[in-house]
Amino acid sequence: MKITATDFENLTVNSMNWKEHATDWQLQEGRFEDIDYSEAFQPEVNYEFARAYWVQDYASVMFVKAFLQSFDFTYRVYYDNADDTYMITTNYGWVL
Image (cartoon, rainbow, N blue to C red):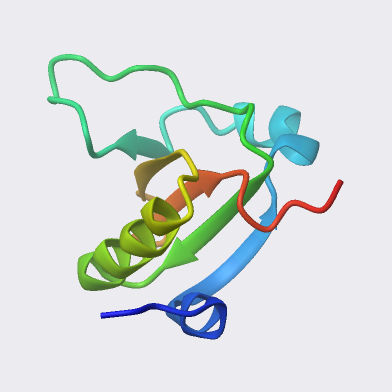
């Protein structure tokens, strides 16, 4: 299956410039849980990625990951406890 940029945008429910607002997000420590690590080891949230995208469910996470992987973008996936969604941080969508 080929996922287009339009598909990607339709999968997301919100997005923002993540790194630009990192200090604001750091004040909400504990809000995000990295879903790729065990509960016993939760690495700190990575604020170096340029963009953050929120999706409603895990099926959307899988499609977003497939899209990002197809273009070799690195990413991290978190669960957002504040609004029960998933958040993906990446450099995709960042215009220099």
